[in-house]
Image 1 (cartoon, chains in turn cyan, orange):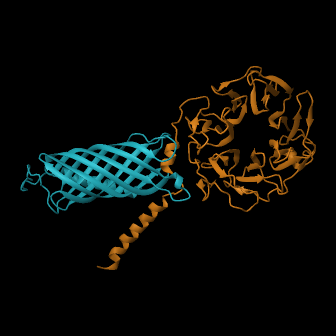
Image 2 (cartoon, one colour):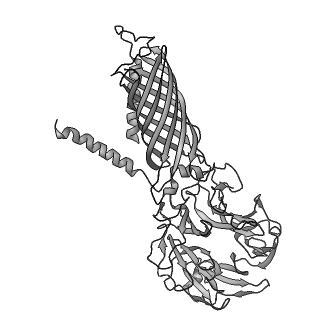
Image 3 (cartoon, chains in turn red, purple):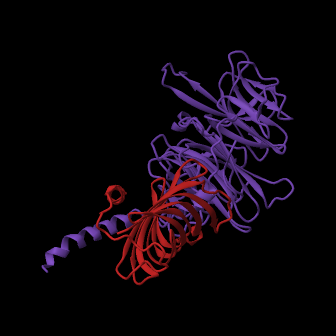
Length: 199
Length: 383
């Protein structure tokens, strides 16, 4: 866990240092009115902070629920053409449990996204597939992960865009026999701020 | 490209992957546990309390909370007829009378109540420590200390209480053995028999015929017995060393099965697991961190020694064990007592009461309940 947190901290520092750089004066501004401002080989990273809303835990007969939590994510996008990009994301969600413990889920996903720009706005819709690690009171599990996200951002210049992101996340916790009756699926809705930087 | 260029990253990735996989536990349902959790109650009659006895009587439940007696459903203290300085050390009930072993500087003894609220002194004694009932018969235990002139001398004598001023001493065959220096854990009816069985700290005795002299039946003596649960056909015993014994009335098993090595099995009860099957639930009441909590064992628990014990052991659910909620609110509580009470109007339903010592957490409760709806358990609720 400490290695994961160290890596995350490093990535956050990299993002902040990039944000702190002055815009080069000799770089031609990106076209502001184009609906296709992206080109093959373009790259972008994004940082997000969100509220984590647990919608449901499917399976089982009991009714305990996770509480409202907080999450973060870091994503990388590589553009294949003027609309499509592939990449990856790592995220983390913390949610309280009824007895006061903290449930943590860290999904790592490969993503594919579709982008559109309407200057000064830009938006994307994204699908992610991967795996996640969850922890609760010293116990852990691995599982598959799927997400669907959409973001709407305002271009603020110097390659930066700030906006809102909405994500639906599905986290199945699958247990093999003889513990198959412990299998559950958690569904989260994450909504929050996103800061995107075009590299 | 040299091979070594990829060797270190590959080894690091392999090590990291191994650590991640090792941190996973297929037997621990994280989300299932979340569903079972209840918000801790911040205050209540059992907050930071220790519940030692739980008794069902006349469609209500009585709990011994420390030295006090509380009655459901509002868990008010019931003291009418008891001395003001009373301290209860044991509760038991027949179908018509609720009994309490009361210590008091002024009026100690065995108290009875026909309505569960108003008490009367039945047998005055300064030594009555505990009371048991079996098939309508009442037994009490006198604990004498220092009778042989040494302060460390302890003897426990068992009496059959017939409701009159005299009580029959039934420890005649027991007191001639070292068992007189061992506390009485309980008195029950033998499996598939009308005989009485007396369970002491390190011995099991049986009266044949019922009420007659008691004889030692455990050829291989269990050590430090600490709990028991009986059905019509089986007697389950828990030991202070974490063993569970099952005896069907025949030959005594040569050994017990380890449930939790080194921690005492302080409570046992048989509860429903489905519409047609049951579970044995065990409460671990150790003093060490982790040596606590609620466990479930399959009633396929063999009488024959050496067979695998189904259920959970040392915090890990064994393969073949039934669905369990051992990893719940009760996990960190030293357990003292269980009581399963079938619903009075629908016997397929019921409530399991779990008494514990909740002194280590400012919001923990010493009494929890879980409801069986005929097909599934609910979740623990703090009282």
